[in-house]
Structures are given as C-alpha cells and as structure tokens.
Amino acid sequence: MEFYNRRGTAEQWIKEGKYALQWTRLSCHRFVPNQVRLSLFVLAYNLGNFLRRLALPGSVRHWSLCSIQVKLIKIGAKVVHHTR
Image 1 (cartoon, one colour):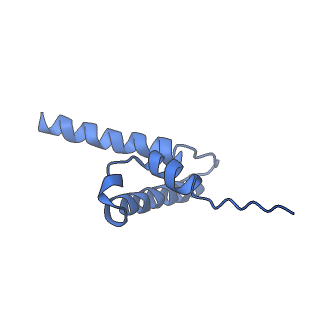
Image 2: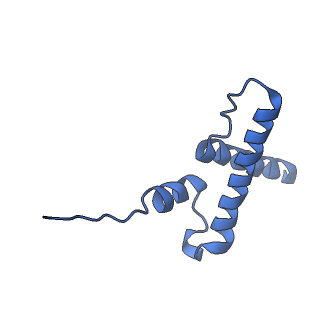
C-alpha cells in the first residue's frame, strides 16, 4: 500500500507539471532540442516548488502551481488610470 501511495503522489506531480507548465509540448522534430526544452520545463517546475514551499507564507503553501500562476503571477499587475 505504501508503494502505491508514493506512486499516486508522483502521478499528481506529473499532472501538475503537465497542466501548470504544459511540459508535454515538445514540438521540435529532433531529440536534442526536445531534451533541452523538457529540461527547462523541469527547472521551471522546481523553481515553482521552491517558491511555493520556501518563499511563500504558510497559507499559500498548499496551493497548486496552477493556482500560484493564476493568482500571483498573471493577476499581479498594477492598474494605472490617467484622466486628462
């Protein structure tokens, strides 16, 4: 049972990487460019996990990478309104 639980956890990490980073988009026709691209996706995933686990407050640590991406990165903008 313990082996199966670890397998399920690993599958959740893979699913999170697929949805948050779209790391299945390896559209190059040759192996080496796809390998580099996948390595960059894995690096981005690890940086996201670092951000989530060590740099963010405790109330945000349980968020998925998709939630962090949408709520903190995509929405985090400053709106400036000028009236003349």
